[in-house]
Length: 462
Image 1 (cartoon, one colour):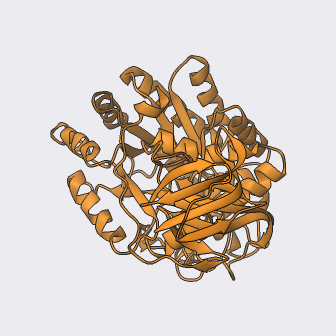
Image 2 (cartoon, rainbow, N blue to C red):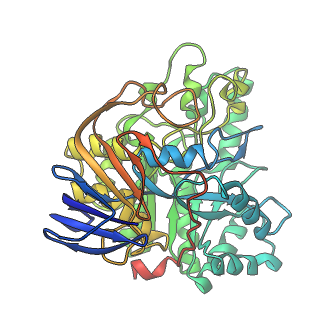
C-alpha cells in the first residue's frame, strides 16, 4: 500500500516548507517537490500542515488505582489519542511489590495486545528493588523498556525510599536507561492530609490545598541531587509549578542533565477553576494538583526556553458518576487522574501557537520530536524524513472545534476543557502508512498498533 501526500506545508521541529511525501511499506520513502509517483492513494494537503504524529509519553490505560481501574483501556484510549493527532504513546507497566518486573511487563503487554490502535511502548514502574532484582532493569532494557518510573509520593502504595531511588539511578549508568520521577514529598503530604481530614476539611479542593508547591519543589531538588550523586540524567514527570521549575533551572544552569515535562492541564487550568458547588471539583483531582494561576506563565516560559522539554497528558481518566464518586465522603478516596489524551495537540496548538506563546516548530518539538528523542524512538518516530515510520498528521489550522464530553472519544463522562473552542484540528491521521482517522471518521482497527522496542536515552541527547 503506497500513499502520496501532495502540496502540504511540512513542519518538523527544525523545518517549515511546502513539499510532497511518498509513503510505502509503512515508511516515508521520498520527500520532494512536485513528486510524480504512482500511488495507491493520493491526498492533497494544500493549505494544511503536515506534521509528525504526536507522541504522548505519559498515559495510564487500564490502570488499577484507588479501588477502581482507569476508564480507558488500550482500545478506547489509543483510539481517542488517534482522533487527537497522537500516533504513539508510552504507558506504564507496574511491578507489583514482591514480584519481578517481567511479571508487570507481561501483564501490560496482554492489556495492549489485540486492542491498541496506534503504536505503544512502556515505562516500568518500580515499587520494589532488592539488590537481587537489579538485573531485572537490564532485562527490561534488552526488551526495549528503557525507562523506569519511581514515586516519591503515595506512601504504602507506590512510594519508594531514597535508597531505592539511588540504587535505580546508579544502575541506569550501566545501561543508558532513564529514570522518570514523580516528585512530591509523600511523607510530608501524608501528614498534612491527615490534619486536614481531622479538621473536617474533606471536600475535593482540599486534595489540592494539602499538596503544596513546596513539597513538589523539595522532591524535585532531592531527585536531582540523587541523580547528580549517581552521575546520571533525571526526568521529572508532570511538573506543575514554579517552585519545581526553579530547581530544574538551577540544575541546568550547573550543567546537570535534568529534564522535565509538564502537562496540558497545568498550562490551562488552575485553582481558579476549582471551588465549584457540590462535588464538581472531583473532576479536577489529580497529582500534582492544580496550582495558583500565576504558575502557568512560568511554565510557558519554561517551555519557550527549553527548561521544560515535553508536554504530555498524564491521561488517567475516571468516570465522574461511578468512579470519582468513590470519594464523595472524602477527597482522600477520589481516584487521582483526568482525561486529556485526545486534546493535547489541539490545546497546545490553539493556546500555544495561535496565542503566540510558542512557534509552530516548537509545537511539533514538544509534542513529538523531543518525546521521541528523550525516550529512544528518534529518528524512527518524531520527524518527517526518509526512512522514518510514516506516522503523519495532516492538520487543518483553520478548523474550529468545541471540546466536549458529548463528542470526544475517551471513555469518560466529562472533559477537563468542556466548552473550550479551539482553532486548529486533525484532518487525517496516518499510522505507519495506514490512514486511521480521516474527516472525523475512524478507519483503523483494534490490535493494529505495534509494541515499540525503544533504544536508550543517550543517543539522541549526546
